[in-house]
View 1 (tube, rainbow, N blue to C red):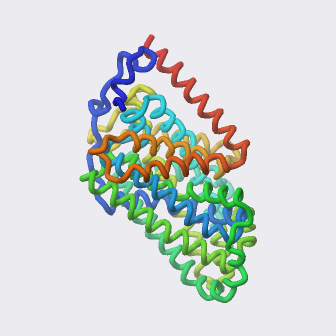
View 2: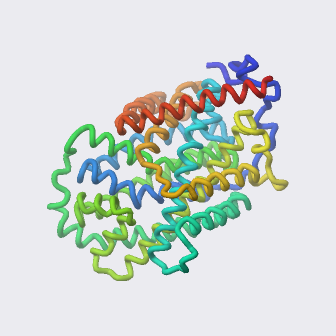
View 3: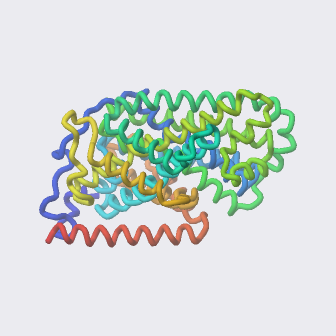
Length: 447
């Protein structure tokens, strides 16, 4: 497989101003193993654990626990593909860069485009989720609507991200620790009720329908994809060839255990139907379930954990989104100014501000909703490209057997089209729009 530089010969494919990404300024490597794991955990332990398990329970019943396991298996294949790619090509941009380097420029662009579309909306959703939990938990003056609180949260997080990855890492420590404390309290306090009612609520564990089970597995897969932030920020990781694979594997294993524990306790304690109903009511479902555990202190703890989790998701998505914009600006798939770093070479300041403005705009679009189904489709296609890139790696660069990337590719493409037809149809339209827009933009640059 030829590298991207050999495949981009036409004026439309590579404008005259195309530059080597490494010549545009390189971010300083400030993330060690613990920092990389925190970035991944902060991205995973958010909307997924507090919402997606309830959605899955509504689709497939108690077998949502099996869906969590299947999704973890699929995520493992993708995680190992991401790990070896990021270890070999430790630059900002994640699959956007891998597609360019090992596949074709348009596939790299497609990965970046899908990431930007899905994750900008997800970051806004997380900010609005935080605002919703805060305004229902604390009596604020009438002037502080949920939209204004969400905007303020995004501005504060943008300031943290703009200050560099080191300060973002300290914020992650606080966020992840609080979220883990809340989830730990939920699991421990729920054990007695789960033991008492488990036999009734966990039966039947066999899926009610294969279609529903696969759809739930696809939705649960989204909950694990936060480990991709580690790969996206590969340029900032110290000793990337050793650190990135370890961080991704540790993050995925810990997250899968937490998801299984929360899913088991929640489903066994109140049943899949009640779990799903709590999610449909647009409350934090774990807060609703925690109220049944007869521990008055637990409800406020889980509420705070839900809020910190949403902040963690938004913070880490801003980090990832800004790095993808940085990479796209370097290659000319976005305005070059987005590739400009601050004087300390610690953050792509203009890209960070651009992401912040975009998220604020989404927060203000009234009742903004990004469905898990749409996220599942776009993320599964994104990781299909990741696995394709892993398959194209030379043998001397590969860390894991080819069958892992093959399994990841087949699983991603297989699960992607089990979401609702209207969702993947809309996703295909967005893919086409992005590719046409890129062609027009690069033609304009070439002219």
